[in-house]
Amino acid sequence: MSNPILERAAANGVTLEMRGAVAIVTLRRPAKRNALSDALIEAIRDTFQNLPPEAKAAVIDGEGEHFCAGLDLSELKERDAGEGVYHSRSWHVALNAVEQGRVPVIAALHGAVVGGGLELASASHIRVADETTFYALPEGTRGIFVGGGGAVRVPKLIGAARMTDMMMTGRVYNAVDGERVGFAQYLVPAGTALDKAIELASRIATNAPLTNYALMHALPRIAEQPADHGFMTEALMASIAQSAPEAKARVRAFLEGKAAKVQKAN
Ligand code: 1HE
Image 1 (cartoon, rainbow, N blue to C red):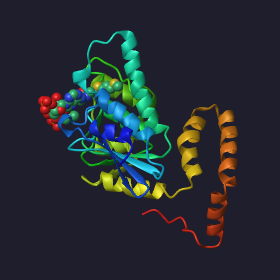
Image 2: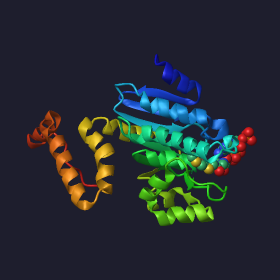
Image 3: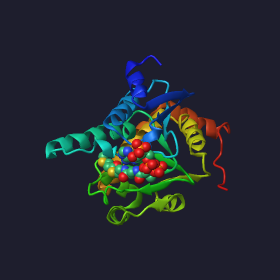
Image 4: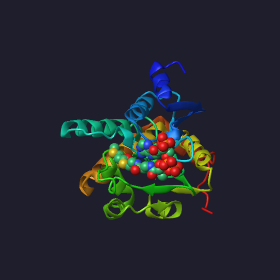
């Protein structure tokens, strides 16, 4: 690795490994359950802003028994209102680099996915959880509030009512219920989330880049537009995507019997 920004991120606990077209980004602070210090947040931002050009999809996971224990509580000191806003906004920049970067991001979850760890997982595009995964928002019981984009992203996954319950009561969701309510799109046996996430990312990496781009950048905006605006934006995006030479080649391959059919689900 020759990029000094990525080297600094690795020294601060976020490593990047390329496997084909998939960038594997790993939180490496297992002794502290990958708690998100300011240095780790900065390293996440720098890594996702500097993915190598050959990366077409990314996976994020955490070393050790847990994906991520959230905000590093040892750094939670008295901040005045302005400093609190800046701190929260620095998380927004880092997690926006995950969500609104160049490539789709798959989170491979296991163990604790709590507080800011859940906010990070929510900024990914697809979540794969293994059977050891549990989800919580302890902010509520610690007398604080989400500050890493959770108030925006978590309700989109599970609804505001469930998030309110989690924060007011300290409710913890296990892996099965977490998938049922919408935290994860995949639930896999213990210890296999990373493999599954890499498998999905490898497949996603073969999509037409414009389709992935539309799913990351157009779909979330269309979903928030009034229906009438959304229909118009959809039409524009559809037209741009289908006029790309790659789309025409893929459709032609199907019509000539050279592309895979849709298979019946098991
Ligand atoms: C930590 C943190 C942390 C562990 N900040 N140091 N997040 C929380 O409220 C979750 C707090 N953590 C836990 O509930 C547990 O640590 C876990 C369920 C995640 C894991 O339990 P376990 O038994 O495997 O580990 P442990 O023994 O509790 O922790 C091991 C070490 O990691 C220990 O330090 P040590 O020096 O005594 O070895 C812990 O203190 C340390 N550690 N979690 C700092 N979070 C943008 S706003 C976001 C707001 C939030 O995220 S609030 C939610 C914070």
